[in-house]
Length: 105
Image 1: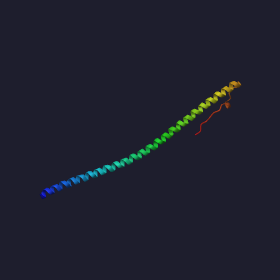
Image 2: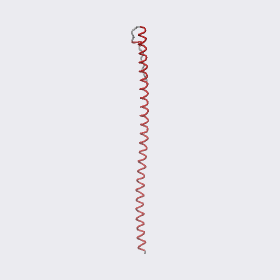
Image 3: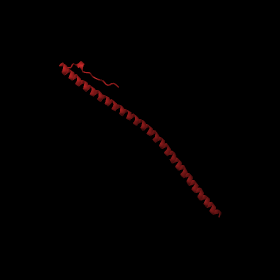
Image 4: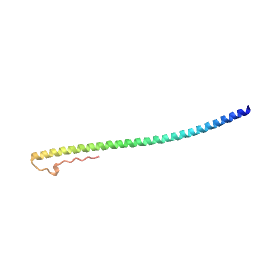
C-alpha cells in the first residue's frame, strides 16, 4: 500500500513538473508574442504617418496641377481676346501686350 502511494506521488510530481514546464514555455511564447505585437503596432503607426504624408503630397500635387491648368486656360482665353482686339484694331501684337501669369508657391 505504501509503495502504491509513493508511485502515485511520483506520477503526480512528474505531471506537476511537466505542467510547470508547459506553463513556463507558454508564458515565454506569450511574452514573445506581446513584444512582436508592440513592434507591429510601432510599424503600423509609422506606416500610417507615411500614408498620411503621401496623401497630403498627392492632394498638394493635384491642387498644383489644377491651378496650373486653370492658369493655362486663363492664359489661352487672354491670348484669344488679345488676338481679337488686335484684329479689331488692325495692329500687330507687341511683346508687351501679352500678359503672362506666373504661379508661385
